Amino acid sequence: MVVVVPLDCFSFHHCLRNHTTQLPLSSRSTASTTTTSTLYFHSPIIQAKLPFFTNSDSFQVGRPIGTYGFINITSYSAFPSGPGTDYSLKDLGGLKTQDVGEGNVKIRLYEGRVSRGPLTGTPVTFKVYPGRRAGGVVADALAANELNTHLFLQSSAKGIAQHLALLVGGFETTTGEQWLAFRDDGKYSVADYAKIVSERLSKSREVSSWNPFEQGVTIKRRQSFIVKLLQGVMKGVAYLHDHDRLHQSLGPFSVVLNTISEKEGSYLIPRLRDLAFSVNVRYTELDDSGQLSEGLWRRASGAGAFTQMEKRAFGIADDIYEAGLLFAYLAFVPFCEAGVTDSLSLQRLLENTFQLDLEATREYCLADDRLVNAVEFLDLGDGAGWELLQTMLNADFRKRPTAEAVLNHRFMTGAVL
Image 1 (cartoon, one colour):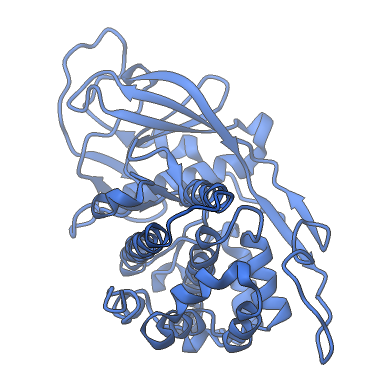
Image 2 (cartoon, rainbow, N blue to C red; image 1 turned 45 degrees about the vertical axis):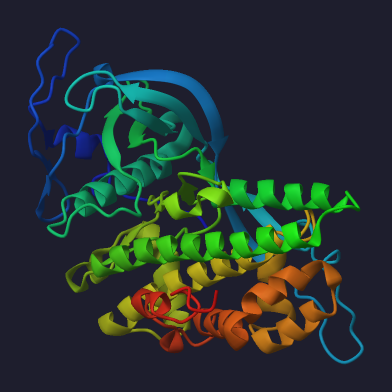
């Protein structure tokens, strides 16, 4: 997918230039005022109801903590199907079966904290987009979209969502880099959690004397932790959809956790992040949604969604499908030993091998002892997990549930635990 964005309609600099605030904007200022910030962009005026810092002097930058980008999967090599065909997860591993194009936008992450104003001392995580010289107009557009989306959501009369990352500031450097500062509500993503617990599972099974009772307690605790994690994710998605916004990049790396200790599950708060690809699906905006969403509407047309109502419904259902893939990831990876499966392998297994037939998928998984705990998790409540997963991954977008319906499903309410 190649993204081209017109500069005059979606610019990070344009957003910051039109952002007015009474907070200190120079290092010589020592007083600070808590005020409502005003941002002008695209259409209506957005009122941000919390301090928002637009100058680098308001922050202290700490150590770098990582980098990431994105990949575009341009094609799949379908696996053979039919009678007499044997499948194994080993065959589905790696990237050799598909063409993958790596995006040009390299994002850096830094620790930091707010150094002045009413939020002084608040830990933050900086998300740094490269300037146009390094990242082109795409980087600028993604940063602007993420900034705009957060400020719109944080201005909601319904209050700031508990399950979304909180943006506390943003500024552009002299070299054109765009820095977004998010309150630090956790260092670990869902992907980190899954990797750590699967590696821990591998090590524990190397010890032949592992207590079966202890194993049962650990599995039950993990099941409860993951259900609560999924509840938080879907509450975040429901909040987005209730505000006419799509996430459009939901996955294991786009959910941050305040704890990965399953013993602290009662304190777990998952938060959605990475809203750079978010799409406005308000009816008045569907015909002027920008080129960042071209791929979405192209797929909508391919699925027979042409009217505004159909396009909006497709977009919401597309988020639910992504959430379904995340559900599948959490149902399998944390319950399997390290290296048994991963997100791409699962997606290919579900989409290519079994054509989204979850009953056939279950039969296949039953034959593999390495997947027994994952099957048992989805089997809870007489197969409630498989039932929910099948509806979220329904090939017909019109038959997928809303985020609220997912939250009210018996598997998600915890009634099956």
